[in-house]
Amino acid sequence: MVKSDVYSIETPALILTESKMINNIQRMLSVKEKYNVNVRPHFKTHKSIKIAKEQLKQGASGITVATATEAELLLENGVEDILVAFPLSDKKKIFRLLKWVPTAKVIFTIDSMDQALIIHEAAEELHKKAEVWIKVNCGLNRCGVEPGLEVYELAKETIDKTDLQLTGLYTHAGHSYGATRSQHIDEIAKFEAESIVQSAKICEERGISIRHRSVGSTPTFEKAAQYEGITEVRPGNAVFFDGIQVGLGVAQLEEVALTVLATVVSIKKDRCIIDAGSKALTTEKGAHGNESIKGFGQLLIDKPLYVSRVSEEHGVIEVTGDQIGNQISLNEKVNIIPNHACPVVNLFDYYYVMKEDGTIERMKVDGRGKSQ
Ligand SMILES: Cc1ncc(COP(=O)(O)O)c(C=O)c1O
Image (cartoon, rainbow, N blue to C red):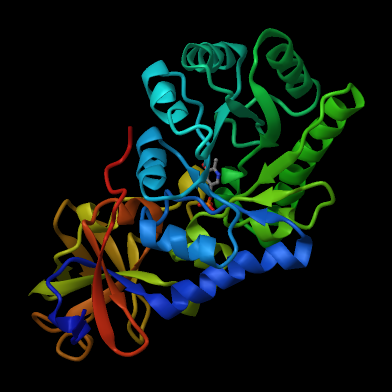
């Protein structure tokens, strides 16, 4: 840890303001008391063991992951309750994760009988009990069975044909990122919650108990948590927030905890060039159809300026003559709010964590590249 000036950091660099992140974790965890739900934050956003542990310390009930290698990293580092919110059908990966059971709790997820049978076979071979949740499609149209009877049919077949312990249903309203107004987010959150609550009701009326009913995306989790029958939310991005969440009205600019520090490397008549291009900011402009995001990142300076073009290492910012020399000069460092924090984190080896006492700590992005 060094007492240091942020502007001495070599760029491009990932800057994390710790106090803002802690506030965001507290905001995330506040739904626990307010609506009596568990909070299981997604690891995919921060990919940091330390941040996952901070979330657990603040009251998270477990962690959500997207990949087997993310799960293994957390298991190896003492995290004991993990939801693998991605349907694994590769038996080798399932074997590796089952080895941790029952020392740790690892929940597998399915949206078809074929996957259920693969997990069942792996568990039988290892003489283990495997816990599974069914993925429900609430409108994102990615994985997931349709809410209602389809969920019951998969639940029934899973119970009839396997030894798997079916304990929950979950869904993810990622299409909320394409919302164009806040009322639209309300409607998506309502359907997200209802798709799970209704499906659980249909299962329970037919004798299948569903203990865990899990929902969540950053735009919807605070709303969906309020519905009777929901037991868990899984926010990911909310640990940092980003340009997309500010654009959606989900977070204020001041709440964004993560920025990319870049340096002005060249100045032309009508533009300046920074050393952060698509390999630092990505080319994301808002997943799932939201086209309202301007450029590839917003500069944190007095006048709103955006990175309007990116190639791999270059970012281009259109500037006017009066800004040159005033806000923009050669070797000037600029702080940029990325559009989408999650893939940006995966491009860096380290965070530079700005602490309240003015020190800067370099912290590894432990799960960087753990995509398998
Ligand atoms: C299954 C699942 N749950 C939760 C999340 C967290 O969503 P967000 O980052 O919007 O909070 C994601 C994100 O992709 C997801 O895929």
